[in-house]
Length: 302
Image (tube, rainbow, N blue to C red):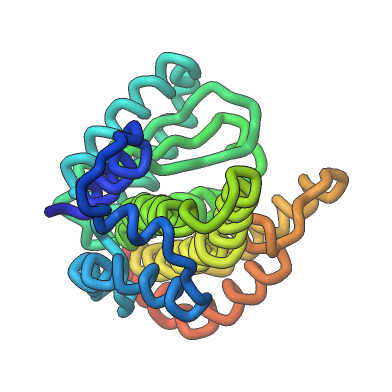
């Protein structure tokens, strides 16, 4: 039985109406009446998902680490397509010919250097003044028109483009969604096991606390990791394409000046690294990429 089906059936079992019976108590009723120690509770919680987490483990050769991937690619692409259509209905595509030509040219160069030839890349500029750029699974990259005036040259466009392409190469969206599914399943299982030994108010409180703990303890740190990984991959794609990777740091300094008077959340509660930490990581990576950049710049024909 698949991971989703297991927890869907568990939820149905937990929420089904209670039926009076004079027969021997079911296993579920025996479990509900038993008071678990903390150690027993943790063991039950862990053993219920261990096999699924192991079978969902995928080694990403680009990142050189294992990932939890339990969401099929077909589902991810379907969700991405629906989201892309909704976004482009809500935000008009920019008619600025220069912007669109620039983003498409840089996007093609960066995508080619990434080795992701199996991805159906699409690059678009959306007419929105908020400085932003994003990518959806399947290679759909969008730049807001408001971010382009903050870029001083084409290499800075390549810095953001490389970052977005890096998210696709890193399978970050698929991993993120898989983590969310796994966490929701853990919460569901914990709620089910805990419900037989707590009153309703205590049960709600435990459920909420577990959700908060999971969010701040697992999901957000992984999101910060994704950002650092996308930065690193993007720098390599820049250098391989003949773009100066030092311009990535220059762009983020531009963004720091832009956001200087805007309130930002603490890094611990943010899905993105702080600017200072991001710049430090970029500068560290750039040093070893300069020979690659210089070689590819000399051999480029643009």
